[in-house]
Length: 177
Ligand code: GDP
Ligand code: MG
Image (tube, rainbow, N blue to C red; front, side, top):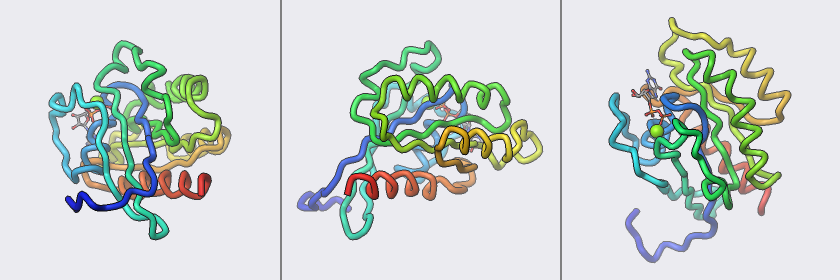
């Protein structure tokens, strides 16, 4: 950590997409800095964060892009998707609508990104058990049909966040190596 002589073998760009307020910025904060905040307005304006990790004895720098609030205006541009080799398609499992919009986000992603992009569907906020509005099976079925990975996460409780990112990064590595 902090070693500027560290040799980076790969840089993987991964984009976060999904409706506003599903927890994209907090998933990124949890993964990159192991932080969480209830009020995450502070993350507006941040383009991406990086995290360097080791996969198969190689040093991989994950460059994770956040929408910086632009998804509110559906203004996520093609520059956002350019060069992305992975995508986290995030919905809030307590908001059915955010799951229903996943097909549209996936369509937009597939229209802009490389066809070999590795995609992970994420049902976030699994800590809010009593408020669940999307059954696991519904999301699983969608993921299977669309041939994407699927995981339920909590940025708040740190559940499956590392695993979700690591799964995507490992799959990207497997494809390109
Ligand atoms: P974004 O608009 O998709 O980037 O969503 P944010 O990351 O800004 O999160 C929106 C709100 O949901 C904030 O109040 C977060 O604190 C909250 N939030 C994000 N992830 C979780 C989670 O896993 N569990 C719970 N309970 N709240 C979360
Ligand atoms: Mg955000």
